[in-house]
Amino acid sequence: MLVMALSPGDAIMSGHGEDGHGMRHGMNWRWLGGWLGLLCGLPLAAVAAGTRVPLTIVAMDQASPPYVIGEGDSFAPQPGLAVELAQRAAKACGVELQLLRQPGLRMLQSLKSGSANAALLLSYNEERAQFAVYPLRDGQPDGRQRMSTLRYVLFVRNDSLLAWDGERLTPSQAVVGSNIGWSVIKDLERLQIKVETALNVGSNFNKLQAGRIDAYAIQDLLAAGYLATHPKLAVRALPQPLVSKDYFMPFSRQFAARQPQLVQCMWQQVARQRDALLQRRMAIYLNH
Image (tube, rainbow, N blue to C red; front, side, top):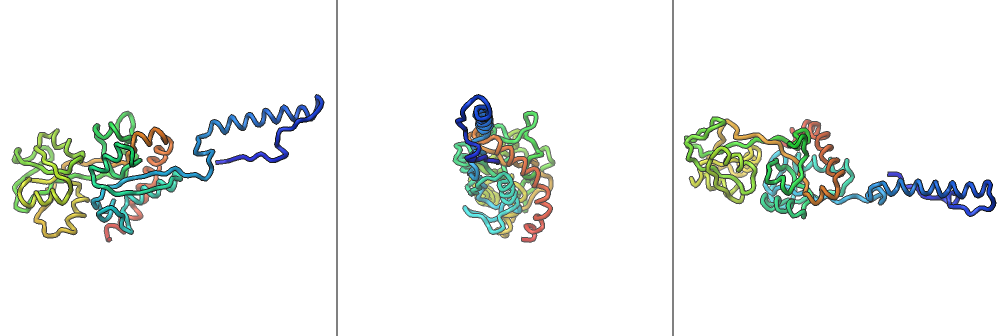
């Protein structure tokens, strides 16, 4: 941004007579007026040179390798591809980035209340669209500006006879577990599949192991991250995916109303940098 300072020689002059000095006096008034008009038309952030807009983004506290690494309220030294993508987008857009981790339901509540400005890796549904702003094209989520595409799969016990052919669950009265607030619940209900929710991944896998649910609908990468640290669980994924979804960086309605240009900048940078970042960094995380 260009901030123009007036030098003494550019100051308004109080000349005498009707020739050169008076003409310079009038020209200086017009010149200054033009610059003031230009400055008034600039965004406030541009006038305040050197300031950076603070941006708080929240991620889920469950591991979802290679996109979010580690569990709990802190990030691993190698934080994950989604975190790196957010960091690169924030740098390109010139914002002051703060990253937090929260349980899934609290993350949604933070986005709804506006205490978080944005969230990492949330799929679109109509309920979330009531309080979060997604990149849209012709009224539909714009997959070009996604952070990633992830798959939900059904996990069952190793001895289970449950079958999923991509359209129908057999037996039809089977109960499928999911996490509170996950978008896949709507997909299961639309298929008229009975759903029972729990607070987190560990609770659902324990319920599955104990026979309290017949299957567990979960993102394949999230499941892989959990099972890598819980190898004694006797469970397996059914081969046919349940559903594939694009995942985005949605913003709170409050922040999007205050900073619409910044929101667009972040989405554009995600789209611009995503594929190259995945190509460069995926192997590092897969071998981590």
